[in-house]
Each structure stands twice: as C-alpha cells, then as structure tokens.
Length: 317
Ligand SMILES: [Zn+2]
Image (tube, rainbow, N blue to C red; front, side, top):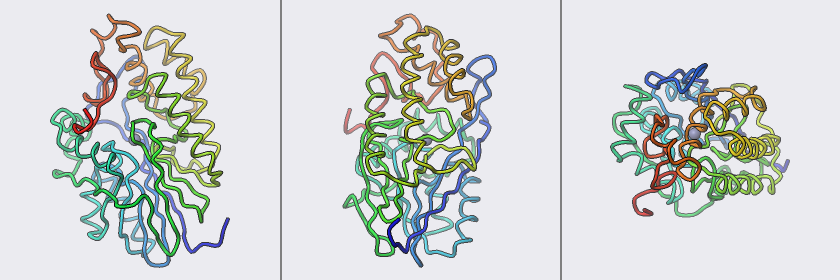
C-alpha cells in the first residue's frame, strides 16, 4: 500500500425485519439485507460512501461517525436505489455540511425514485414511518474525481450492477474499492433488474473492479463482520453465473430458490433470492402465463413486466 494519510472504516447496519412485506414462499422470512456505509477520512475531513435508509439506521451510523471526530463534508452515492441514499436527509440533520453527490445518471434515478408515486409507496410500505418525510437526493458531481486529504478518489461508472448506471469509488492510495451493489459479500444478490445478458454485463463490471487489483473491496450489502476482501469479486461473479444456469434449468420459483440455496445456502437473507426467482419466472419471454399470477414482490417499478425489465429515469424513457 502506498503512503497515504487516508483511513477507511466500514459501518454495517444489520439484517432488518420488514414491517410490511409478505412472505414469498414456504420458509421465506422477509428481511431487508444488511447494508454498508463506508467512511474515508483524512486528518480532519471525511466523506461517506452511501447513506443507508431508515432513520434509526442513520442515527446509529451518526453515533458511530461522531466517534471519529472528523468533519463530514460529503456523501458519495454509488447508485440510485433508495436504500443507499434515502437516509441522506436524516444524516444531514446530524451533519449539516455533508452534501450528497453522485453521477448525473445516479442522480436521475434517485430523483425518479423520490418522485414516482408507486416507488414512494413501495419504499414507505417497506419502512413505514421510518424514512425521512422529505427526501434529499444527491447533487450531480462536476468531475468523476475529487481529493480528500491530498489524495485522489476516482468514481468509476461501470454500468451494470444490481441496477444500471452503477458506479464504484476507487481510492488508489488505499488500494480500496467501495463497490456499492456491484459487489455483494455473504448476502444473496438482487437479480430483479437483470436478465442473463445483464448478468453477463454485471460480471464484466466486476472484472473492471478486479483489474484495479484492490486489496480492500467493500460490498454494498454485506454480512456484519465479513472481511472486505477482494475474493468477494470472484464470489459475486460465481453467484451471477450460478443464478443464470439454475434459472435456465428450473422452471419454478421454488426450483430456482432450491437450486441456489444448494450452492449458496451460507448467504444471508434468502428473501432476496425469493424475489429474484419470482422476477425470473415472471419474465414474459420465458413463460408468458407465469407473469399473470406473479405477486409483485419488489419495488413496483422494478418488477419485470411485459414492457421490459427495470425502470429508467424519465429522461431516459
Ligand atoms: Zn442495495
């Protein structure tokens, strides 16, 4: 590792039971996956990567942050899913100087999630009374790199992760990548916005992380206490390959869940796997009739439907 004045510390909010989500099948226990927020600090100033979601999660994060005694000046947001930036408004009550920032595409998606009625209803149903009433979306960053404590931090827009327009933050002086939801660690991966082709693109995004030969790799969703090691890159790629294969071999939600649990049963929160499997079976190309009796498990705008998979900011529609 190069000489650097920077430090990196990772906060993880644990698996969280849903207030309002139905079980997706026998044995399903609806939970929101554990999530990370990463502190990168210079001598005095610091930034976070991703802001968590619910008020109590953010309050605990703020308490943890205060222990470092740094001035929090920014929060980099890796992608547009509300669970990674929805807590920004609450965080700014604790740290008023901490402005959220992200690429234009990520801000576009965040704005969409902050204003679309169905998506707002989805998030509020999953975290009833637990989200900031008024969302604060990140601002568009002028340049894909910035400095902290005299060191350069680089934003890399790789495209496909568990959503499109995903990015990661590379900190060369720490040999670190903060991967958002491109990398998962010990937690089932969300496939709802992907098909086989997009999963291949996601594998290529992980190759782009690996090409930097990082020694520290922080996943957006990670099990509490799991080490932030680069082997999470290959493990995430293996999960993606396995999901595509199992989904091609099985033709029921239960079959996909069973096949994946046989291979990845050590990962936390199979609820995500249930949602991924339901999304896969609902795809019109694979089974037109299946879509009719699919109980939409994920965010309404994110659920696959006849119009295609995933959603886009309105400007891209
Ligand atoms: Zn996420």
